[in-house]
Length: 249
Image (cartoon, rainbow, N blue to C red):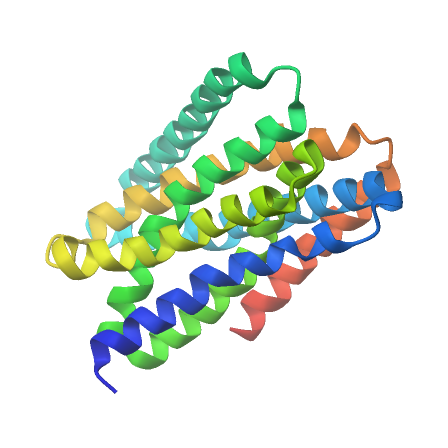
């Protein structure tokens, strides 16, 4: 099979794994509060762990290939903070429109943040697959595993805020498609321009965005359902799941 087509397929697999995140929307509505609380805390655990053990170290690795160690730390720290500030800015803008519906607001924020996260992820997966097939496959599996809880963080809030399963699927699909969109951008325009500096910036800022949404959106919304034990357990399961995935891959 043509390497370019195979790279697109590998990237698509990683991106559309997000759709698995709609499965909680098919569970019994009688357990609505438990499902929402568990899903949000689990997603928070996954996203926070990805940011700390994967995105930030990778960003630092790319930066240290250009700068010395201390400037690299400062460089990555700056872009993590900028990612947090950007996510906070988006949060405030959306708050004005959805202040009466916290779940819907959370779903919309998740879509924006994850699209911004998935586009560079798609670029990275496509380029990796094009140059090193084994690396591309390994990367796509890792991305697919953490895309599932990302899908949950979109689908569950949207579904339980609107009661519309089709809308939840549609918004989750947008997030998954953004990964493939990143691959298309890489193929048509960006492959020759992507360098260690840009990858470091993208990964650092993405880590900041995901840390913000985990700590200031997903966890607080999970706690609001008065299921503190479930929130704690789900958060720890999310962390452990990601640690196991990282160790295996």
